[in-house]
Amino acid sequence: MSKTVKVAIAGVGNCASSLVQGVFYYKEVDLSKIHGIMFPKIGDYKPSDIEFVAAWDVDARKVGKDLSEAIFSPPNCTTIFYRDVPKLNVKVRKGKVLDGVANHMFNFPVDKSFQISPEKEDSLEDMVAVLKETQADVLINYVPVGSEQAARFYAEVCLKAGVAFVNAMPTFIVSDPEWGARFEKEGIPAVGDDIKSQLGATILHRTLVQLFIDRGIPLKRTYQLNFGGNTDFLNMLERGRLKTKKISKTEAVTSLLPYDIGWENVHIGPSDWVPWLKDKKIAYIRLEGEHFGGVPLSVEVKLEVEDSPNSAGSALDAIRCAKLAKDRGIGGPLLSISAYTMKHPPKQFPDHIARQMVLEFIEGKRER
Image (cartoon, rainbow, N blue to C red):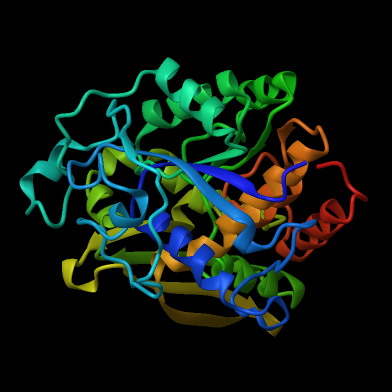
C-alpha cells in the first residue's frame, strides 16, 4: 500500500493552483501545528503525502507547461501564498474542450478569459493510458461550471482507468443514482458533487439556517448573493450554464428545513463578475423569520474570502478519503465525506452529523 496519494487534475485553474500550493505549503509545517485544515491526518495520509502525477487543461498558456508553472499562468488570479512550488515533471496535457469554454468568454480580454490551445486533444484512451502509467489514485474534476459534457467525460475516464473520482463542480454525477451505481459496480470510490468551501457562503448560510431551526425561529425568506472577479464568475455570466449550480447551492441550504417556504422565498446564486476583485468572493446573506409572538426578525451577513484557497482544504480531505476508501476496497459514492465537503452529495446531512460520519469513516467504524 503506497504512502503517497497520486493525484491527477482536470482543469488547472485557480482551485488547482491553491491545491498544489497548499500541498507544498503544508510540507513545511509541523503536523501538530497545522492551521487551516479540517482533518490534519486521514488514516495515515497527511496533506504533504499528495503527489501530483497528471494534469489536463485546454488553455494555450497552460498546455505543454510543467504543472508547477501552469498554476501561475493567466487567467489564474488567486493569491500566491507559496511561490516556490518545485518543478513537478508533470506536463499539462490538452484536455477535451467539449462544452468547457462558454462562447461569451471570447468577448473579454485574454488575460481574464480562456484562450483555447491549438494542440491536439487527448482522447479518452490517451487519458486512461496516462492514468494507468502514472498509477494515479484519484482524479479531481475542476472543469468550469456548466461543463456538463466535459465533467461526464472525465468521470468516464476514471471508470475506465479504475481511478477514484472527486467531482468538485456542480454536474450531478456522484449524486446521480445511475452514475453512482456504475462507480459501485466497478469498485471505484467517488466523492461529489460541487465542492463546499471550508468557510464559504454555503456553510455559513447552512449554519444560520440550522440556528433558526434549533432556536425555534420559523424561516420565512432568505437570499444569498455572490460576486467575484475570477474566471468562474466570468464563466457564470452565461446564465444558461447555471442550472445545476443554482440547484446545488439552493438544495444545500433548503435541505436542512423541515418545512417548505416556497421557491419564491429563496434566492441563492451567483450574481455578477467584478474583474478587480480577482479571486476574492463577496457574499451577502439575509434571513427573515419570526420569533416569540410572531414578531419579525432578520439577520444580514457579509462574507469576504479568497475563493480558491477556501475550497482547497475541502479538496484535500475529499482526495485523501477517496484514497483511504480505495485502500480498503470500497467502491461507489462515499456518503460521509461527500455530505461534509460537497454542496450536492448523494444524501444531505446536517454538517455536525456529517463531520461525525467522516470521523467514523476515518476510524473504520463506517464503510462510507
